[in-house]
Image 1: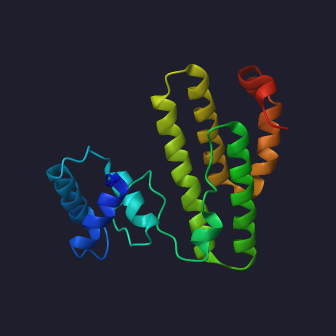
Image 2: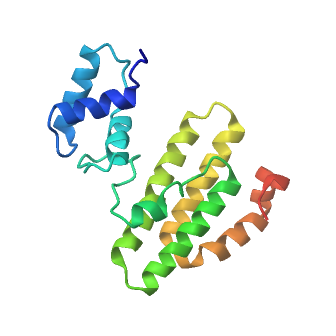
Length: 182
């Protein structure tokens, strides 16, 4: 018989307990039930992410968790936040910026809010990754990406121009040189 994954265990407990949404008290119940079943400890943010990905409301606040989005936004923004490389971060921010501009032009406050929220989470995750990085090169990339996210949040409409100037700067060239995307 195949062993149940952590994700499956979390979803099963959520359903068995009759939970309708996930808040702090529900997370504590799930953590306790997982421990009772001998499941290796998982982070609170992982529990929240599993429940959110299952389409259930998550009311707990986790600075690293992307807020639960309603359709069609969930599908539009799915998988868009990537910053493992400078190239991925640039592509992500450009696409989020494109969507933000469309939502702004249409007066879609919810779409604009989701775009900003995604970038805020990306910034926090990049900063956390820079602190955890063992290699100085990785930490430098994550700090750079966090700066890009910060600039985007300050002026989404000017990000593309700012990025072109940033990539041409002597500081950027000395840090990343030929690795920089064109």
